[in-house]
Image (cartoon, rainbow, N blue to C red):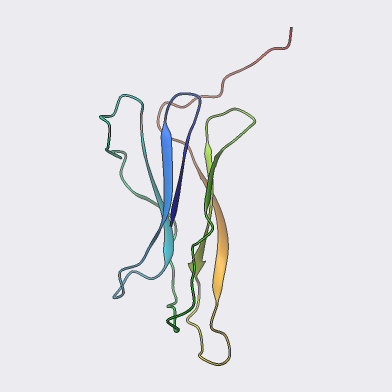
Length: 119
């Protein structure tokens, strides 16, 4: 349940869902890597877009299936990530899908806006 994109500098941003079934509720996090990072590693640590505060109450309900990581088209530097999280726990028979959608943005170190000119 993740999505990845690369900006003008070769930086990669990866967004994903988290949950552990005990004390980490369905939430949204991200990480990244610079172009100089060794392949196969996301070394910039984990950031939180939002921590979930509710739990899924049914076995056939799904969340986080549709995620999207995009690079900002205005300057090809910051990343925008869309995913789902749980804000409140579902009530079986009443509200079995209480997930919410969140859009978050982050910029990796060293990414600066590039000015373009029309000729």
